[in-house]
Amino acid sequence: MRNVSLPWLLTILMGMIAAIIGLVLRFYFAWPFSLNFKYLLHAHSHAMLLGWLLGALVLLSYKMWNIEIPTSHKRIFYLMVICVLGMLLSFPFQGYAAVSITFTTLHLWLSYILLFKVARLSRNRGLAGKLVQTGVVFFFISSIGPYSLGPLMANYLQSSPWYDQAIFFYLHFLYNGAFFFFILAFIVEKFKVANMIKNQKAFYVFMLFGTLLTWFHKLDYSFDFWWINVLAGMGSIFQILAGVMLLHPIFVAKPSIHFRVILWVLLLKWIFQILGSFPMVASQAVNNRFVLIAYLHFIFLGIFTPLIWYALRKQISGFNKLMSTYCILFLLTELALVLPSLNLIAGFTLWPQITFILYLGFVVIWCVFGFKYLVSKAETPKTL
View 1 (spheres, rainbow, N blue to C red):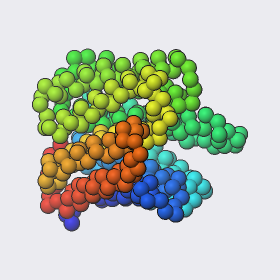
View 2: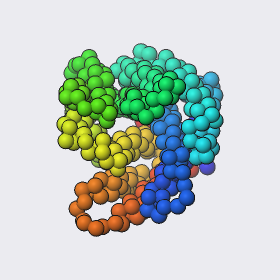
View 3: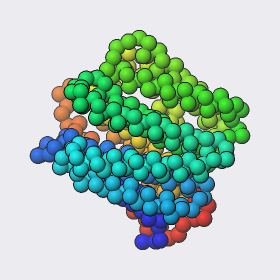
View 4: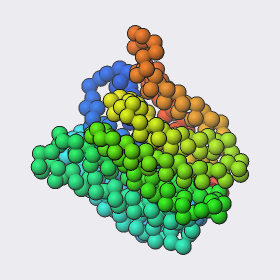
């Protein structure tokens, strides 16, 4: 194994572990066995969101500006990884309880410190720096969700819609806020498109208010008011307007086919948000668990994860073939999650088994990506 940076090594291993746990969950649907599904799902989601995505996107902030990670930052990062390992060792056995809550709380506080340092490094770095700083602010805002769970439980409101909304608030401002703005910063910095965006202020304001207003999509899970859909729809329109302002100059520059595919998926996300503002469409996500899972995978596995691998592509041999296979399997897994709800083949009962087989191939490709990065011969100086 080459002299790979330890933060990237740990982050990639976290991603592989999270993917394998997800595969175990898929196996459970295909061939049920004795398992506390909810507990293992907590381990999977925390490892994926905090161990893989948060870790990788924070590291990309250093990578895209070719900044050597300061030693003090690394120490905080390692402590965060230890906390994720603590979650992996506690959630499967006790779910949300004293040990797992302790590790998640410590991880949150450590994240505050590291992200504050990242925000300081992002000063005077143009639009990309501003996007990173906004992502950090959204991370802080997202943590209001977990902090509100305690008071809700103390008042015996676990079964109320507000308990679910606290979780939705956290998730929205984590992945649609913090993660999403980190990704936008990477795209802006990689293609140097800041000067190509005719009105940077309009782009930023549209994306910012679009993110705030699309939170109303989450309220639609618990409440049925027409104005919720209207505000969510306004946010969706703001985001797609900003998205077109960003993507148009990039498409004109004719990036690689794989990056174009990722950008098309990103554009589809904004289109889906507009469609989700209509009650008929929104009800599908609200009432169908697998459609919701497909949408979350669409974002995590169709946008965030491919962009991370793309950023590391120069250290991954055979990247183009691997990414082509990844994209095909991603599409097939999405179809396998959504098609059963359409009931196109009456009486067909093998969807869980088919879905597991597809995810098995998907996880294998994921692990090959990680392994090839870890054993590549040399780090290319200009990593972007």
